Image: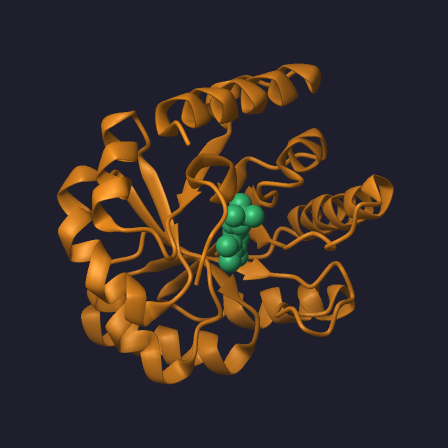
Length: 231
Ligand SMILES: *Cc1c(COP(=O)(O)O)cnc(C)c1O
């Protein structure tokens, strides 16, 4: 595996997909997913220019982020967030939490942010694939959740996140991403206070080009950069 070549290749695939849709490659944020990866390999990736990293488990992030914080621009939390892990996560100062999908977690998060006197930027995770193993609010319930969360004073909704259907059928993957894009447009039209639809976080190693074609401006990529994961 050649880390440097992988990073160059992913960046150029992102740029090509952006150009196909008439957008600039700089408009798309590459969040490099570092779960299961060692500090030393992550540091090498940082040396090769990566700036944003994503972790999906609080426990693992707690071990790694403090060692990396000075070397990265942003830490994104992309995994399912249990309410009893919120405090630990906030100690790591996540720049963006991608994965809020229910009001209970949002309310707890807001309580902690009130205590800290800070605002946390989040995305609402939507289950566009219909797979019941995946987290995310049902698309039909997403606008209701956005409205409820938008009333919380110390949380700011910055957009939506989804995980595409795990399938080789490209048009079904595309449908998931289109659904998220359309949902964001619908929410934007409603001009809900305290809510911006600035980010669409969608696309991983196997589907990020489709996601960019459908409007993603954050992609979350692990394996295409570091190789297959072994747990
Ligand atoms: C692991 C993970 C990714 C990255 O997956 P790859 O297929 O390795 O690119 C992206 N998003 C989430 C939420 C993940 O948990």
